[in-house]
Image 1 (cartoon, one colour):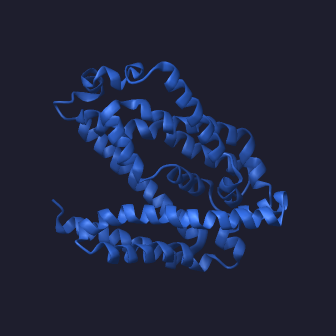
Image 2 (tube, helix red, strand yellow):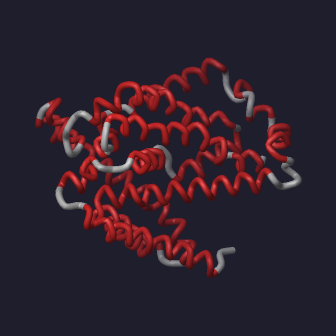
Image 3 (cartoon, helix red, strand yellow):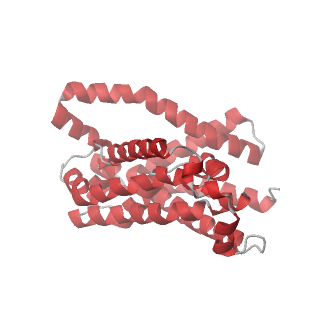
Length: 287
């Protein structure tokens, strides 16, 4: 049951996110500051933002439900990113940072010409509107139930908050809010995992592994090995192309140096290695 303190915390968080946009608006003096933080963003901020961008609320709903049903096979969706990030450290991040542009779309124009720039811009516009609407609707369902506010009004409130944070503060505000979210996700999920493992009926990590169904760890009980292999290969390619395409160059354009461009990739790399193992402990324990 949600108490008054829960309402206060959630309300404070919304106000805090809104304040971030207003505080950081003074740091955007030109288009370079607004879109890429003038190339002066600390590597740990860009790294935290890149990690947050790599997963969504689906991780704690859809993926968690899949872990509950069929075990840790879904981890391949997350760990497929590791190969892509290692390649980015070795090759992609430096090339993207050295493009010397303000936005990644400028790089598309320089590399592929104005026609492709316009085509790619306009073809993405309706898709982004659709994806953003789906994401806003997902959080709107939760917030509407929490505050007992009609869904349409809650969508307007959330849309205004998100727009003001990004529009008023630019890249500085967006990355600052991402860092706050990363901190909250780490602390909350780690605390939850520890509390779950500490329960007597679970018996720690060893007890959890002993109690889960064998199919949760032996994936060949779920599907034929060749089908799993094909799916894993497809997932590897999807993550590789997603992490190393020009659209992802924005994070590298924000960094101060080539060294920082490489260092920032370490945060999503480490987060991807450790995070899923912690996030899905409650789902495994629920089985």
